[in-house]
Image (tube, rainbow, N blue to C red; front, side, top):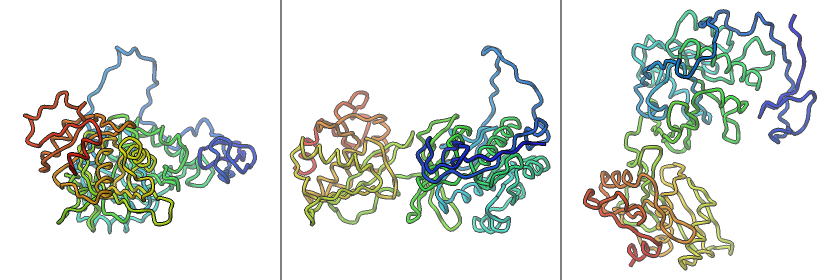
Length: 457
C-alpha cells in the first residue's frame, strides 16, 4: 500500500516545508503555502499511461553515431504563428501559451485546430463545454470533421481517449485544470501542474505528436505554477494586448527551435483573430493636419521592421512637481533621455510635465526609438510639428551623441516602401549604406543639436 504524508508547498515557486510558514524562504511570497497530501508512487504505477509507445532502453551514443532526421515542420496555415514558432510546428514539441483571461488564447488555438487540413486534432477543454466551443467555431465560420472536442480534466481518462482517437496534434486548455490520480492534491496546485506537464512531455517525445498547453497567468503577469514549468516545455509564447485595443501580440519568450525575438500581430474581430500582414499601417495614425509632438520611429521586432508613431506632450507643471508618464515605453529610460536633453543640449524640461505614448497599445524596448522619442518631446516643447514624411532610427547616448543601431538597411527599406521622404540615422551607420541604392533621402547626424537644427531651423 502506498505511503502518504502531508507537506506544505509554496504555490508560487514549489518550495516544500514540513510545517506552515508565513513567508516562503525561496521566493519571498507571503501566505503562499498550502497543505498537500503526497503519495509515494508504486513502481508498477510510475505513469498514468498503461502502455508506452517507446519500449527501447536508451544507451549512450557517440556524437558521430547519432543520425539526424529531417522532420518537416507542420505548417499551421497561420503565418504569424509560424513565424513566432520558427517556421511551423516541430513534431514532438511541447508549446506553452500564456496570457491574461479573455485575451484570445482559446480562440487562437481553436482557429489553428480547424485550419489544419488532413490533420486530426484533439482539443481537450477543462474550462468550457463542447457546445461552447462549437458556438465559437460557428462564429468563426470554420468547422471540420478532423477536430475532436473533449471536456475532461482527468489525465488518466485523457490518455485513454488519445489512444482511441490517435490525433496528430493535441491541444490542452488549460494545464491548470488537469489532475492525475498519482497526486492527491487539488487541480492547479504546484504538484499537479508539474506532474501533468511531465506526463504530457513524455507522451510528446515518445509519440512524436506536438502538444499545445494553454496556461493561466498570475497577478504579476507570469505564467501560474512552478517556474520549472517553463523549463520543461520547448517553447513559451506570451499572448499580450490591451483589451481596450483590438490588436493582440504573440511574443516568443523561449524557443528551442527558433528565435526568441519574433513577434506575431493579430486583430481581434467578431469572427476571430485576423493576421496583420503590414503592422506599420496600424501603428501610424492617419493625420489630416500637422500636429506637434508626434514622430515616426523605424523599429525592429525580431526580423520584422515596423514603423511606430511616438506621441509626446510637454506642458508647464501646474502643481510645482513635474510629472513623468510613459505608456508603452520604459519610464526610467524616458527620465534618462530627458536628463540628456537638459544637461547636454540645454533644453529646460526639468520644470515641465512630460507625457509619452506609443500609438497602437504596443510596448517597445528597441533602443532605435530613442531619437524619435526625443524629437517628439522637442516638437511638443517648441510647439512645432514634424513632417509626417520624416522618420527616425537611432539610439541616443548619455553625452547626447546619436548612436548606431542594427539592421539599419532593413529599416531604411521599410521606410522607403511606405513612402517616407527622409530618414534620420546615425553617422556611424554609414558603412554599407549608399544613398544611390535608395530613393528615400538618408540624413546622417552625430548630435541631437544637428537634428533639432535640421527639423526646426
